[in-house]
Every structure is written in structure tokens, then in C-alpha cells.
Length: 196
Ligand SMILES: [Zn+2]
Image (cartoon, rainbow, N blue to C red; front, side, top):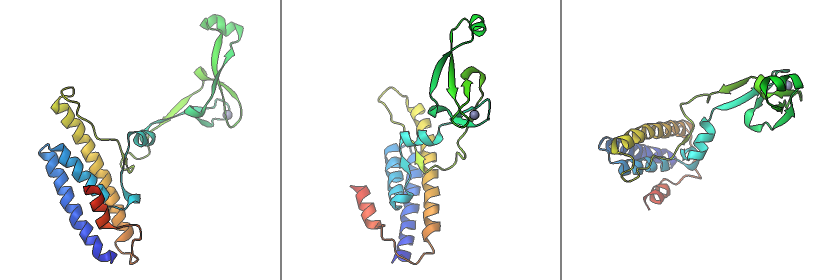
């Protein structure tokens, strides 16, 4: 009975959240990580926070756009193929270079001169919740001093906990009032898998 299971998850959730925060306070970062990973494992796979540097970078990276001088279409910077074109003689005398960097607008095919076309940068839409966090900072023996590591870990910890809490809230919203069972979710199995 899923309705009976949810309070169970709730108890575990509170327990491991406290455990994580207390471990963080006492600077026991390994226990802290263990609690976070257990918390994450309490949720069915589709809600879990993904821990990946690569994915996180992809999501949070600022995107650069080249604006076409002619039609104002925004072209994704990384998709543009640049090529060189010989400059008009008078320009080449002035700039002392023979070639200029060009790019072609995907929309109107106009040939833009890179140095004369505008660019815009857009920031990630909402920095709050991505369901992805970078990997926790690692402490290299003796290289990174304790305080520096603590600061890095603290930042990471609260980001990760925030993501997990946000996912847990979504999970609860999606399932709390539903009466059908969760075919893809076996709480005991998930907990055991994490323990091993
Ligand atoms: Zn254009």
C-alpha cells in the first residue's frame, strides 16, 4: 500500500536530513555525503538529483549568441562555422591584416563580419533548481587546506541538499494524494542498494 509507505519515507527523510546537517556541523564530511546519497536514494529514479560535473556545466553555462547584422536573428555561437575572407584593400591597409573572420547567418544567409556583429549572452533562466549538482569537492591530501575545503564543501552541501529537498517536494506533490501503487518504486530495495 503506497499510502502507508509514504510516511515511512517521510521518517527516513527527516532522519537523514538531520543526519546530513549534523554531520556537516561536526565537519564529518564523509558521513554527510553518505546521508545525502541515502536521501537521494529514497526517491524513485526519475526524481533523484543527478551528480555530474558535465551535466551541471551544460545546464548552467552561459550561452553566447551572435546577432545577425542584417536580420537580427540570434545564432548560437557554438554552432557557427567561422571562415576567413580577404579584406577589401583599403581596410587591410588600415588594420594591417589581410583576412577577416566571417560567419554566415543561419536565417538569412547574410555574411557577417565577426568584429562588426554584436553578441549577447544569456544567463541560466533560474539558478535555483536544476536537478543536477556538480560532484562534491575532493580533499587532496595536504594540498587544499582544511578551511578552503570546508568552504567549498559547505557551498556544495547546501546546493545539493536544496536540490534534493526540491525534488522530494515534487515527489510528494506528485504522489501524496494518488491512490495507485508505484510500480517502479520499492523503498526497501532502494535503501538496501544504497547501504551496500
Ligand atoms: Zn540574418
